[in-house]
Length: 445
Image 1: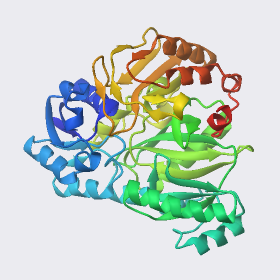
Image 2: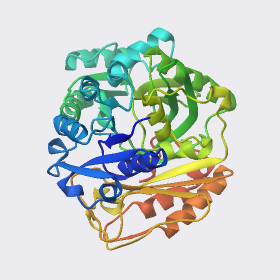
Image 3: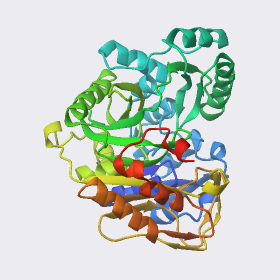
């Protein structure tokens, strides 16, 4: 097992990794920007190294500074969290060349699944269903129009190196497709340094279902069940729950097997997530694999009792999975609400600033993953996620009631948040019945 791990991330995920490391008896080092010098994850780590100014391209994305920090602190491994360099194959390769263990999949697996279009091709070869679309990246607008006419509108343009909803545009007409193609390429280049895009048939009113995977270096692969992630705004998830109210036992088993096959196809190791969309007729299609830990991993931990971050670290240290698929059991229902510093009344405009006062919820079945505290100043430079509120109960209705109660207790003064908006969703009749799809928020607004 490692004696010291460097965490190449910030916010609640950095703090989450620190906690897992402490319970494993591992020392931690965090790197941080000047904007994060007063953040709780900096104070709670064993060591901290400032690696640059606030903008992420001058700090959290500076590979050479992170590697230097690992070397001078004698860190044996780097946990990238999610976002930033978590799915960067070049960074994983640099870690490898510097004899620092990257806590994640091999660079080859990141490349195989990181390029969304190549991943689609790989899945087709082994029989995992994919959405109809282009067989390679789109070369120009003319090619995009031809494919759109072949598969039929509406279509969606997606960044090959994408994630987090960036570089994605839906089009219903020729004119809209031309604009979508150019916009998606520009956004993809800006967000990922890669302008490549591909095209798919846009499945209307789908549900977004993902399966959590764990795989060790000895060929053992298991899934930890599904997460329903259909409550989204502009492809950004707001609420996740497990189990999904849309899946039957038979469909869950079928999708789980497909998820394991997808991971095995690229010889995947460590934690990852296979993402599917589910249409109105219960047909499911592979859309991508996230080769990292997910924001919403806590709800899976709550219903399985498995600490996914610890498992990531153990796998990276060369340990075998201590359980097989038949050993994975599920108990109760869990829901996560992402609390963002945004103003829903003003188009979800980010609301950075100083937190004057805060009261965090508690009680039975309530978990809060956050890095904020009273007097903390939320910086303007990063994602607006400030907390994740997770509840678990015996069944879905009890979990919804518990979440409403917890949201009632959650108080933040000084900045605008999405707490009241999330509470409105919890009380919505369609949500309570489980009748929703990825356009739920759009219709609600």
